[in-house]
Length: 170
Image 1 (cartoon, rainbow, N blue to C red):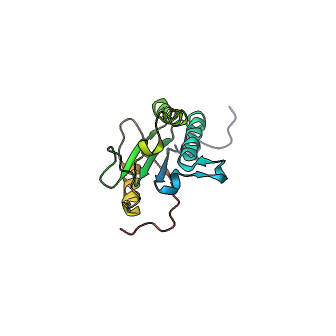
Image 2: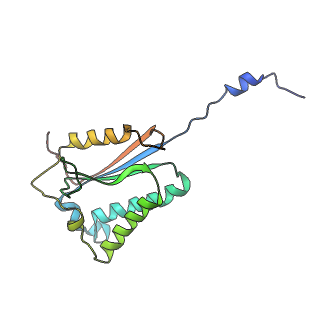
Image 3: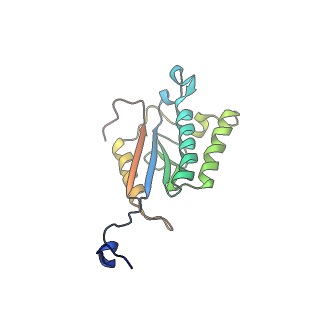
């Protein structure tokens, strides 16, 4: 048998398999402007455009990187299910799955067919704001918490959607 002078020990240490487990959080600040139609978006409402983009991303990642975690959170939200800081976990940060994709698709369909409105689904008060510090602390906790049957995230991304140039101090 012909060998190039490499023993089995040196071949096995020449590379290591590195498994990437990416986590992506869509973080959306609710404000009056996020509920308005924008001419630049072909008269589409910003939140709906963001949610459509999220669904497209999930549809692509489920094929190309099915182990990617996706989460979607709204803040300045005063829905009953929101936490005491006004942060609503719409899609928990877990690996892409059909249940979450269907949930998002159903919401967009309900909004398009006027079975619900954004204001009903995402109630907010413009005079009551969530401190950015609380939002970022929640993001850190989501990325580091243990989820059964899922590896820890070693590549973390946050997409913050806001139209607020001066967030409130804590």
